[in-house]
Length: 146
Image 1 (cartoon, rainbow, N blue to C red):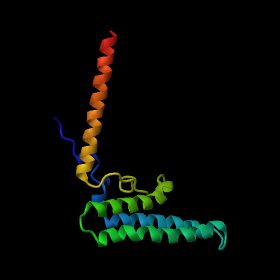
Image 2 (cartoon, rainbow, N blue to C red; image 1 turned 90 degrees about the vertical axis):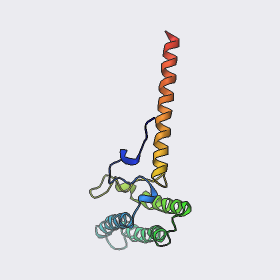
Image 3 (cartoon, one colour; image 1 turned 180 degrees about the vertical axis):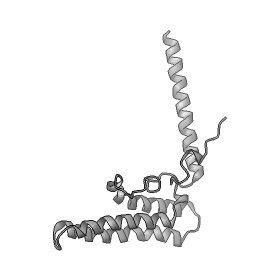
Image 4 (spheres, rainbow, N blue to C red; image 1 turned 45 degrees about the vertical axis):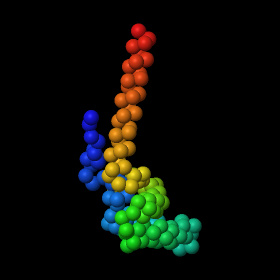
């Protein structure tokens, strides 16, 4: 039996909530802040685009707060990791529109679905077993048709 580990992902790729760092949050906040500042600078004061950029900066502050709090009050519990993952996913959802922009870190700013490395490995093992079962089913079906 083979063992699936997290090493299948590149070393710098964020694959689970336990690997999320404050530096990730800071970097994503700085990236989004720069996008909103550029939008604000490119438009006249009181224009809709200018006002939207100012509003988005406020939304950004509100989205970053609970992610940062999850580090400050980290007790290592799965509940805290779930909350961190939920708040991170909301924050990175705002950034999704810029994923093809220079400076967007696709490896670190992805949507998270796993709490820790063991969940990543379990999920990969489950997917591998399902593929094997499907291949065996297709093989048996082919053999029956001969």
